[in-house]
Length: 392
View 1 (cartoon, rainbow, N blue to C red):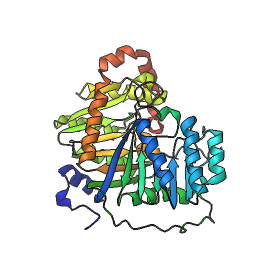
View 2: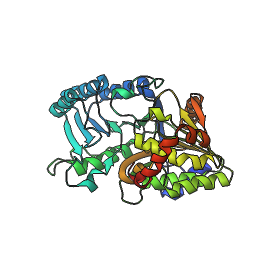
View 3: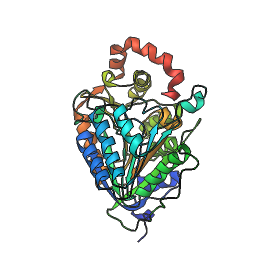
View 4: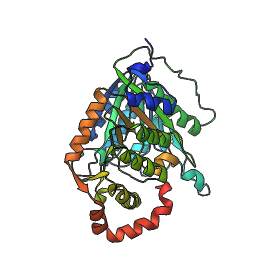
């Protein structure tokens, strides 16, 4: 049985996206949707504790708190029982790492920093790795939006406990997560580090029935695979587009594709954080500038009220879901290394649709008049920051 889906078994949306992306869907995967820290961290810690041979871990954010130290303790414990543990931290995103956690990782694991900040290399400092990857024994993988910090603990229902989604994966798709990890590791590790010490293992099992395309996107000054993926998804939409994102910062191409979708009768709904919860004021200001023209053309926008919604999900025609680390902003499309999953219709897409409906129940509808009235003076500032939106 082939590890790639036959085109005839894929949904209409999936077939079109496969053509745009130039990739076919891997079939036979098992996907578990993990909602918020109460579901995400126990699953990741359990997988690390069960690892026998290898753990490869990459993240953008590694900050402070109990979970930062607990995560490091489990990584160190795995290394102590003979597991090869490689940790790749972004040189900017993990600057605030808990010192005790860092000491545990440095003393017990193989640690590399992705593009440490350099004073006279601004062009390099701007391009980060935003990927979140955990691969255990080349058999179980995790990816999604979660960072390692206390902000992600809890149930995503109050300030300080961010709302997010992560995914536990098994099957052929796990090799793509490991490949994405090795891409960053190869750039960051020392020349003498053994690259072929652990050879890739062919996956002969198909533990589930989910069809997935992995999209590995690399930072670019102009365009990237992440931008192509989002544009293609909007282009193939026939009935509906549902977007959940913490940072909504459009360029002209994405804006006109969304408006073109509305013109052909597609329903577009967007969930963003309430402005007071946004952890990036610049991104929040940019969204205030981007959203009103869309709302005036009939796009529905909702502000998630309980906390920062850090979830990243695009669902097209209730058939295909795009999840992973990609935000609906220009940084993800141009400046950051990213990793995404394009998942064809099945139980995972159904679960994500239900999550969207649940989040909608905790969100307030916005209007362009309300934004202009409540954020009148911020709107002026938003127009000032427009020229730098590609860096936000």
